[in-house]
Length: 429
Image: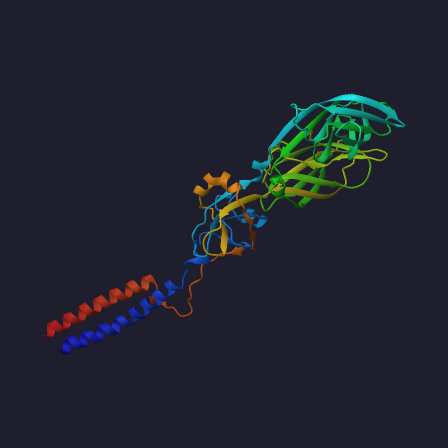
């Protein structure tokens, strides 16, 4: 009996460190990264999604912080609820919403007259079908084949007798730069239009008119933002180089130069990405400003044919023998992406991003985009970016045997002591 008692006492004495270690190990596990906002530690950043109320579906626009920290193709975006459960969503890009549909009406010049220094031109619009209303929001004029610039007024009429003012604008053709249309700002049902060409000393005529009804999806405007650009200017070899920084990898859709001073100028330009590749742009690839007595015609915008997220961008302006343009500022316009998500799960929801190993998710919700588009969606806001880190281990009260290696050493030592003790007792007996 004394042998058994001694063995039991020794066993308890030797195993006590292990018992202490075991209890502390379980406690540390319980207090580790579990559930809620601390789940999925492989994602580096998170943002709280603020929904102002209850709704089946929500939508949010990404901000520059997300573009700066997420993968370039945004494949690592995730939405989670307060238990760490992934919430289904799909992504929409602004370029998907830029389609334009045109309805075209022909018109006939029915009357023209000189009144003081002005010339009046009256047009009758031809309906597309009998008893079908005419609707238009833009007028396109055929221009004379000469250089000119005229201030104009535009009036509309239902019967060709009573006229109502609509808009004013400039029509011009100056060295290949053309303005031939006038926007009405809204759709009108007028069957007659009058153009007043002011101070038409050259007696220019405008024999043709086309009425257009342009229906463009207006969501594009909500997908665009503008901010001041970070840039530096270098002058060399009769050209100006402007290096535009894009540290947040924004999807840049346009650059707007602010040119100081006065007077006319024309400059050819080219746009390159950070690796020196030429980027196609819309338009003629020319910057210009033409100053007239009371009118200025200018184009100082650079519009890439396809939005680009390269950093940096390099804009080269060819000055030839002229002095460099006095660039006083530069704004960049960039496109945002929108996430549409099922507003389910425990609040608050969070947006996770910053995981280079993540693959793009695939959710069934994308198959119901057309249905969801007709539903009321609540606009959510994004909070500040939070750096997500797993809690560091508390080493102030730990010792070498509280790790996995120490645990194994304790077990081996206990086993050897027990074997040695029992062997000696049995040998004596």
